[in-house]
Amino acid sequence: MNGESAPSQPTVRPPIALVVLGGYLGAGKTTLLNHVLSMAGQRRIAVLVNDFGDINIDAALIRERTDDVINLENGCICCSIGGRLVDALVKISARPERPELLIIEASGVSDPVKIAQIGLLDRAFRLIGIIVAVDAERIGATLLDPYVGDIVRRQIAGATALVLTKTDLVTEQEKSTATAAVLALATTSILFESTNGQIPSALIFDASVVPRRRAGGFGVTTEGASNRHPDICSFSFRSDFPLDRKKLRAALRSLSSTLLRAKGIVWLDQDTSPQELHVVGGRILITPFAGHAAAESTIVLIGRFSDEDERAIRRCLESTQALN
Image (cartoon, rainbow, N blue to C red):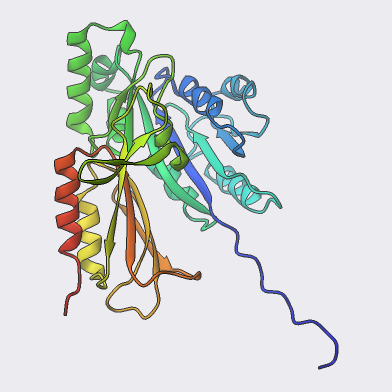
């Protein structure tokens, strides 16, 4: 030995959770975002705002809740300022102290799926969800508009969760009509009503989903007995057998209508090391897991599940086991 210490291994930093908040002009995105920030606690959250116009009014409103706001002015985040979005993401990922969560509030005329795709070009980010706000009062007329109807349909179809806003301004019949119109276009059945921007924190924060024991096994409920959205729940699937990669992918894609997200460490039949699994909607990421893993596969699934949904999902995942 020459007395020199061995070079230290570079620290692998955890990815930054990414949420894209979309919705047409006036749907209430900034109100939703300010409510999310009010629930943040000690979490480090950065917000990237793309307002439509030279002066970013949304950013000024959001600064009442957090100082970590990045402005991208002048319209559609996924086309005219796409390069600036990439630059902003690179700077965020290179920070010595990264945020735990980045929320991108998209302009009302942009496609949130394209924004998410740009964000995922950098492996420093991991998509948590695409949440789209829909104005219950105006959605019918907006969908019929020959100029913007297609934009709104794409926004709704790309969402992993939908939030129907301004429900206090419409009748029950109008709300039912708006809900039916939205779900007819959606690829998810996860839809919540919102008044004054209130949404379940579990849409954003995994820590808000707390296990509890219930009849028939272990279930999960959202925090607080008075929570307005107690039907976001979670359960774990475990297997002592390796899982078939193709069957697993197909099974997870089939669950996208009720699944908010899933994550886990799995053993696959063609691999000699464990794999890290992340699922948001129909997007599935399987990558080698560098840490220590138990001998069994474990997947945690978060969504809007009934007891029958849970039983059906378990049967679906059990069918992916490579028993031979």
